[in-house]
Image (cartoon, rainbow, N blue to C red; front, side, top):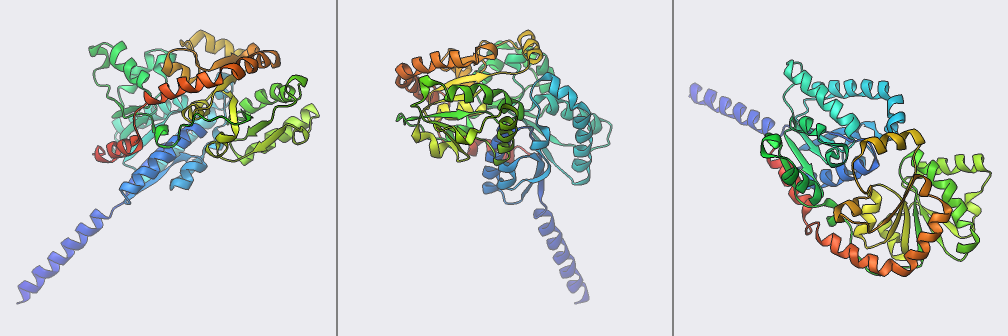
Length: 402
């Protein structure tokens, strides 16, 4: 009788331990660096949380991922750099933060680290984690690169580093083709690259209908906005476009301070330009009002291409950054839509070509050609896979954890 009761108690304790073990939170750390990476991260977090409520997310993220349920260890607004020179200036900051994140991962029992884009920092951070694992100072981690550095632009040297990751997930078919077709079998041994389609296909609806306004997208970084505003404010006040309606969409309400700084420096009241309106609304809500966009090169140009909106792409950086990039970067285009199509669909006005005169020329061409561009965009969207991409990515990340 006593023995039976004792056995029952032991069984109950074992059952309790089993329940505690099964309820133990799975912990994932996400390392982003900028707004586009934060957006991508937020999508996969949302999808993973739908499928598994027992996963807890931490990381270096922005507002989108925080809204999706990630607990921020640091905010990406503190990483606001653009170009080689600016990155060097913040080297000590990034080094210090990498060690802080390492300690957080060690102390909080993180099981998986997902690196999202931002190759300059994330590759160094990965090397630090790998070193500590090999030295037995850090628990084993599953390390996944989601949207890895653009080896097709920067050269093959980074492939050796990517081989050390447990998983690499790309989001464009031309990237997958690069790994499959350009690399020899013996070179790619140990490098596992997955492609499930482009996640933005799940998020943006295509339309061939065009509105009347011209959408202006200055970018998400301070330096981009500072380069964009002088040219664009001169453009919208030009006599040739006085009857056009311009809609400038800022990526964050925090960015209004850059408008104020610009107004003080150039003695221009942007808010009083009669044919210019500023909005913080989501692009998918204002796309129907627009006939085309003038946008700083970045992920956003690809997003709006999926919605069927033609774009004139612009970009300007410092002369030293431009010089270094021209020496290192090995690509014909900088716009993702053009790269994926392997031809120019969107006109790119870079550095000296980003001027009022060139924009006026391209706007005239755009008026005549925008419907044809929409047809091209429809074909390009079809290349990127069907709806359900995010679900496939979430399944892969969850099912292949161990």
